[in-house]
Length: 137
Length: 137
Image (cartoon, rainbow over all chains, first blue to last red; front, side, top):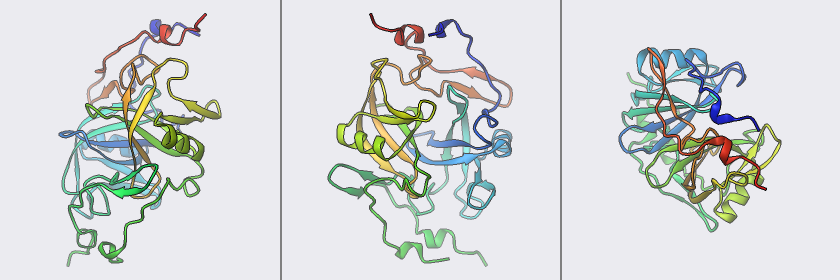
């Protein structure tokens, strides 16, 4: 093994999108209570806009375009810290979440716990998703 | 839009590996202080072993095999809760981390913060990685 302790720590200015094939996972964590709220994806453009605006912007793989979190629901994420992991291929955002992070109306997307015996809903449902995404007149 | 509020919530017994192409992201979070420690990948076998043993097991994409976290370093993760997100394609583990989660010797892999002006190391380096992974006699 190389002497990793002696290796300098890189200080990248953005994730290594090229190595990751263009998209990296981005985890959003509640900056206040530490809850993990959701995981989505970022391309270089989403990352740059997030950094510049302090609003979480992801890349929607299903829609094939930038996803400015909360643009429909109002459930925006104000970014208070951006972190990158050791391999520079995963992003962690610490955010202040307006309303519910999850499109199902739960505060966190991780509202179901799996045990050896069963799966239960353990999360807090804040809003009626049908209401949150209803088209405004 | 469909009336999502009226839709029943599925209670899956495992992530939807088929939809995800066989591997899903798995986030490990410190069960005590809420720190996000790392992100890795799980296949169905890694998930099943994690659930059965309460030890975090991932799938190493670079080595192409199961990765029982801590098998070399001793930095095992005891799992105290397993959660799945709304799309059933991301896992959240709440864990008790022995030593450092990161192979660089930091407690969390997310030890670098990126701002508009610079990138800084903000994490806590617990162990010398060269020491942690040195072959035992």
